[in-house]
Image 1 (spheres, one colour):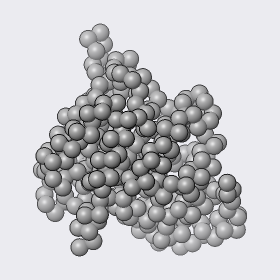
Image 2 (cartoon, rainbow, N blue to C red; image 1 turned 180 degrees about the horizontal axis):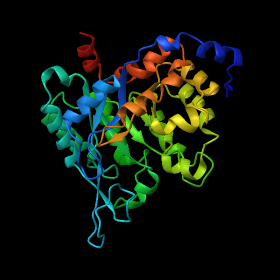
Image 3 (cartoon, one colour; image 1 turned 180 degrees about the vertical axis):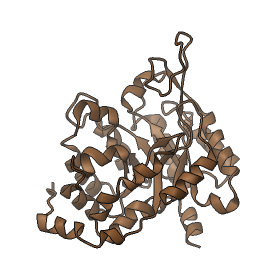
Image 4 (cartoon, helix red, strand yellow; image 1 turned 120 degrees about the vertical axis):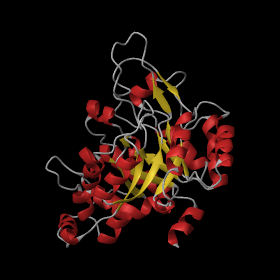
Length: 340
């Protein structure tokens, strides 16, 4: 395996460029229009926050599960981790997304890229359901996901077995994604909260290898805030990504806000030289996401938080990561429309 190294001189040279003159425009590659109760602050608020945050395009998705307010709970939880009540697969999330998208003025629709997520990844009927949704609204859906597989505490709350990214039901979904030229965003944790090794990595590598014609977006590179609470930093993550990006040209990495620290920036807010080298080595394979969930006030904070890292990249790479790489994984028909 090639070892990542970036000389101190090169790092200084990158960071010392005319970064302050850069004006970034963004694509938010990871956005949930509704929360775990299928509620949203609404399209007017989202459009306002996009304008304030210099976000030109968004991955526009629902949440594939709904959190139950259990009979024995006196207070309605605010998040899936608010209490021990279960969550359940919720197909109507895509109906909410389609409805919100159709209310947009025609001039705004090109900025929104709906991803279909409302299906049970353990159900071998899932591909048939997705096909029906695609046929009901031809041309509306531009991707699949975020598909919840290994998802630490949330997985334990969802009814039924924990989905695996390499199960038979999802293999059928991937074949459908290739047929319709749709990217797939997967949430597949690389490990558990306790194991300091890539415990679940094979579950992601199998579909990458077996479905080379599908563009996979790995949500926050298999990490989560819950993993970070227990392990702080996964020391094996950087080398693992380096190997996987070399081996799988269909792999793309979503650098959502949970990746910013402890990986992209150190405790002093300085960019990590090895991560700069990794992103620069694969300039078309990384994208940024806010991962906001139904409320959008933090979008600007999350997206602008990447600027110290972007400023330390070569300028052309920085603009690709900030905006263009997400657009490049969308269906070819959509890319052609955007290029007009």
